[in-house]
Structure formats: C-alpha cells, structure tokens
Length: 169
Image 1: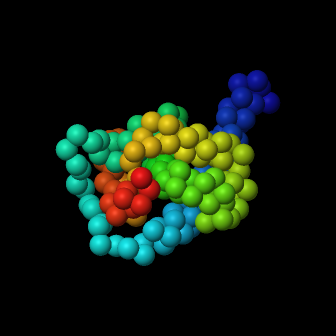
Image 2: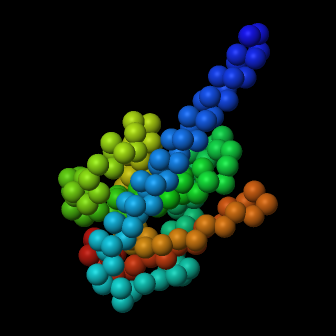
Image 3: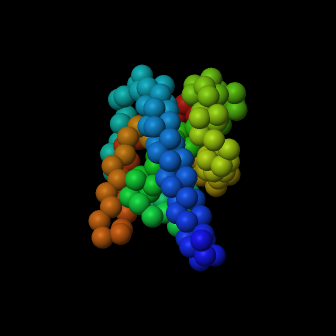
C-alpha cells in the first residue's frame, strides 16, 4: 500500500474510533443528564423556559461559549449534539460540585469518569471548572434543552429551574 493510501486509511480509522467514542459518550451523557435532572426536579415551581433576567447572560449563550472549543472539527450532527449534552451535564455538575463538594458528583452519577473515558473525562472536568471559574454566580439547573441545527447553524434553548439559584448561593 502506498504512503498516501496508508495515511488515508489511518485517517479513516481515527474518524471511526472517534465516532464510536462519541456514540458511547452519547449513551452515558443521556443517562447521566437524566439522573441529574431527577436530582433537582423535587421542587418544580420555578421552571423557566427561554427567559432571562435583565443584566444577566442567557444560560444558552454561556453553554455555547463553554463548548465552543470542543465543536471544532466535529463532522456530524450527532457529534455536535453529544458535545452539547456533555456541556449541559457539566453545567449541572458544576452547580452540584459548588454546592455539595466534589464528592457529590461522584455519588450522584457513579462511574461517569470511567464510562466517559480519559479524553472525554478531561474535557468534562475542564467544562466544569470553566463554569465554576467564569459563571459561578449562575446556579440554575438545566432540566432540559432543545437543540436545532439548521443550515449549519446551531440553536440552543434551555429549560432551567430558578429555585435552585436560591439554594446554591
């Protein structure tokens, strides 16, 4: 096989490996997002959809900013969706970690790091730290989201629980 052919084959193998990893991440993230949502759904009186408080950024805009570096080089809509799910999970995990301490995340979603794998776990930790460092005053849990992708443009809407902001300081 020629060098060019071998390089092309290696690139294809890397792409397939990345696709399989993302598929695994999708399953893990969907399950763990559900667990986190269940952990905060006890008090649903302050559910907010698409509303923002004057002087504050929209949560969806912050999530977009958080995950922007991870979107580079993604090729499929499913990879983009998985990355957004990881960003939203990290958002909620950061709130839990800030409120209850680092160990709370591991007890709420046991095995998340093992299931995500080394690379995704590092990305996940970086997202959590980014949220804590730059947007720690935003303590609304994201309960659900709608992600639309049209003509290569991504639109995110989030459903969040404002009552959690009172409990997290």
